[in-house]
Length: 309
Image (cartoon, rainbow, N blue to C red; front, side, top):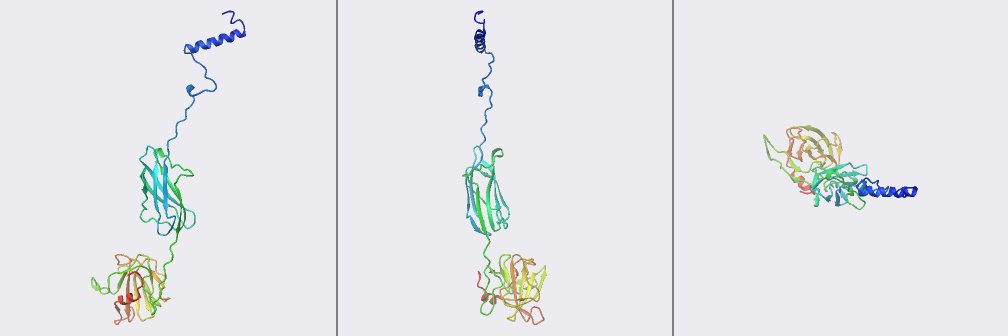
C-alpha cells in the first residue's frame, strides 16, 4: 500500500478505490452534471384536458330581421358530464348591438340545440358569433384554427311594407297589414252599443287614411278610445280611428291627408283588451249635432279590403 500511494499516480488510484468502496457501502455519491429524474430533476405534470367543440353549426348565415338563426353544437371534455356555455354575437357594423345567449350548463357528448330566449332580437348588421365554454376547474374552450366555435352572421333589414293602393273610387283599407275582423257594429256594451267595427291586427301595424281628406281631431281618452284621430273624408263621411299606439300619431288637426297616408299605428290604449283598430264611419259629421250618427262601416271595409281577412 505504501508503494501505491507514494506518488501522484498512486494517490489517484487510492481515491478511486475509496470512492468504489463508499458506493458499495451505501455512501453518498455526487450526481453527474447531466442529472436526471433519479437525482430529483422536476417531472412536468400533464396539462388537464380542455373542453372541445366537436361541431358548432349556425344557419342560415344570412337572415332577415326579426328572424333568428338555428344553432346546434356538441361539446366534449374527458371526465365532465356538463359544461357551462354561452354564445356572444359581436356586431361588426355600427347598426348592430351585442347579444349574449346564456345556455347555462349543457350536457357533454350530446347534440345540443339552442332555444332562443323570448324577446331576443338581432338588429340588422354583420356579426361575429363566438361560443364560450367553461369546463372542469374552469378550463376554457380549446381554440384551434381547425376547431369549431366561431361563425359569422348577416342580418338584413326587412323589406318595407307594400303601400296600399286606392280602389277606383279612391279608398284604401285603413289597416295596412294582415288583419281579421273583431266585434261588429251594434255589439252590446254596458249601457250602449258598439258604434264601429273592430279590425284586429298586430300592435304597430300602420293605420292609414281610407280616403283623401283633412284631420279634424287628435286626442286621448284614457277610459275609452285611448289615442284617437278623426278625419273628414272627401267622400262625405267622417272617420274615427281609436286605440292608436302610444306616441304613434303622425298627423295634427288641420292637416290634409291622402288616401293611404299613415295616421298612427294599431295599439291597445284606452279601454282595449288587445291591439286593434276601432273604426267608425259617420254621416253628417262626427258628433256635430243631433243629426250626426254612425253607420255600420263593415260593407265599406269589405269593399276596400284586399288584405288578409
